Length: 145
Image (cartoon, rainbow, N blue to C red; front, side, top):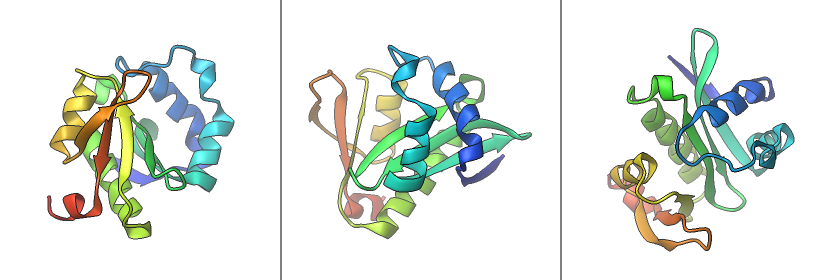
């Protein structure tokens, strides 16, 4: 497994992974365009990928401007191998090197993703209007894990 910064040339494979997931699926795949992904990994924040044999099998993107996790997805065929945890670690370490402001994210309730974030030290703080659980992570909570 190779973990590295996402590049524009990875976007097509990142989109494939995004559409393979079984949880937090997009109601309309056209809602997130390749241009959106490019904007997030180059202007709004940064992204990382995990490659196995030249194929992207997971990715994470953080939005530094909005102080939020924009994406963290792993191909279901590669689940439970530590890929999500490593991508999360890279993303959050980088974020807190840029700012000490808390970071937020939303995920569907009662999912593996929700349990994952709790295990990574995130605190549930309510719900978004779309029903997703809202999580926050402070620099101090991350540093003391």
